[in-house]
Image 1 (cartoon, rainbow, N blue to C red):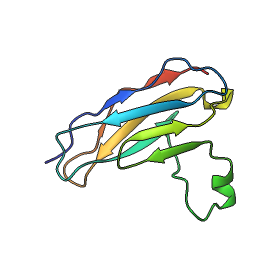
Image 2: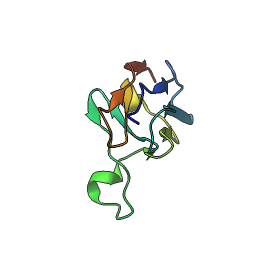
Image 3: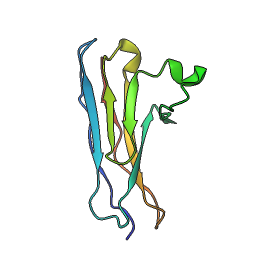
Length: 103
């Protein structure tokens, strides 16, 4: 079953230095969807165990299975427009509407 449009929860504002979690979920897809977060239209990278230079400045933790995007300490640099995309390899992937988070 193809995924339906996911429900995204993005706080509209956050205080610098606080823990912020964004969530994304859809329930129709079978097999269960994987979730990819985007910031300002660019796919966010998943932190890899290798910890290469590119991932060294990643300040978030993205879980593609649960759809969460967790910032342990948000900074002004995390301000932007976020949305997520659900896909399970069947039918078209689905995106939620873009939501702006101001830090």
